[in-house]
Amino acid sequence: MELKYLSFEFAHNQLGFVRNGLILAKIKFLKLYKNYGDGTFASFCREQLRKQRWQINDTIKAARVVLELMYAGFDILPTNVSQAVTLAKLTGEELIEKWRSVIETIPLDKITAKSIRNFVFPQEEDKAVTTIKVPAKVHEDIHREASERGMSIVELLVTMLDFFINSENSHLLQHEIDMIDYADKKRIWREDLAKITANA
Image 1 (spheres, rainbow, N blue to C red):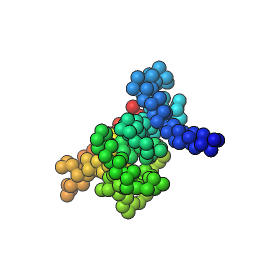
Image 2 (image 1 turned 90 degrees about the vertical axis):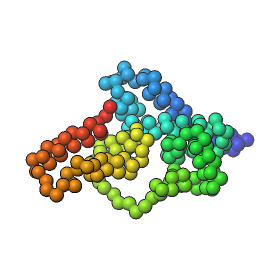
Image 3 (image 1 turned 90 degrees about the horizontal axis):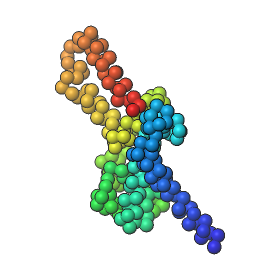
Image 4 (image 1 turned 120 degrees about the horizontal axis):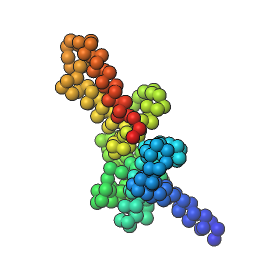
């Protein structure tokens, strides 16, 4: 009897992040954080919850995914934030069909965030990668901005590069560079990037 109870408790506690996501969604969408600190959600997450805003947003998105799958009648569900948030781009029938394919194709003990991502979004399957060392704050900002836009880190970086490098006005497409004009543009771009990565 004790084993059955403990097994139930284990299974139940694996979905604790869903309850947390619901609590966090209530705080965020009812703006219950407005009278705390400087009144921003970012500072509330950082100072009160000891988490970055993108982490909290991921938990909220993950809870939404699991609840949709629960309402659709699935007994097998994502067991952590990483697994569930991988599916956050999907809703409705598309989410249901993709998750059904996942649990029918991938052995249950092999279901991970990576295996879900590679199965559901094969075009995003891991390719040869390299590491770029950046300050911790920049790393957090990139994760946050990607999360808030529902994008992967790679998608965000590609979008930014495409805007700054491939636009028709890019200085990299000019054969001759006016150094004064370039310095001025560089300053403006830095200001724009600072705004993009600034906390709300």
